[in-house]
Amino acid sequence: MEKHMVVLFLVSSLVANNLSSPPKPTDQVKNKCDQKMLITTKTECRSCSLNFEIRCPDGYSKMTNGSGIRGCRYYLEIRTYTLSLPGCRHICMKEFQQPECCQGYWGPDCMGKLTLLT
Image 1 (cartoon, rainbow, N blue to C red):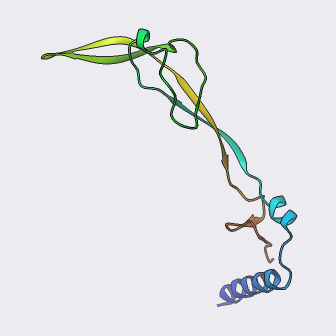
Image 2 (cartoon, rainbow, N blue to C red):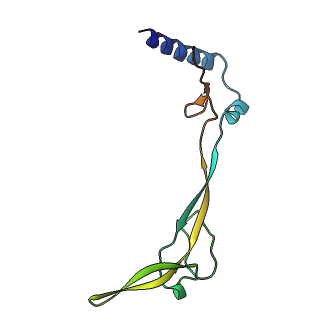
Image 3 (tube, rainbow, N blue to C red):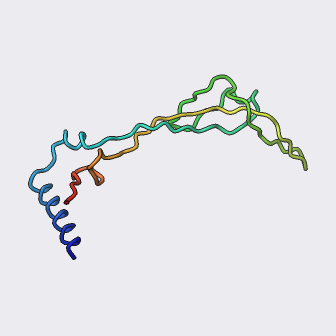
């Protein structure tokens, strides 16, 4: 029961604090500590001679030149046979901002500062 009262007090004081003094725009930016992430993907493996014009998915930049990098295999079906052939692929990257709150802040807008009662 005592834990529920502490949680209720904490939530009500946070709500009252947010209602009485709305955060300034600079506070909202200050409480966000977004993380930059690099997302890497590879194009489909295909014949190296046909791989020069391949494009990365939308939003990604090609990190490799020419026919790309060797070391993958693609499959070619001829009638009832399937051949496994060496091929090439490109590496593609994009930068992504992972939204995160700074330490001690929480919620979708990183509004409240979390304080622990001892």
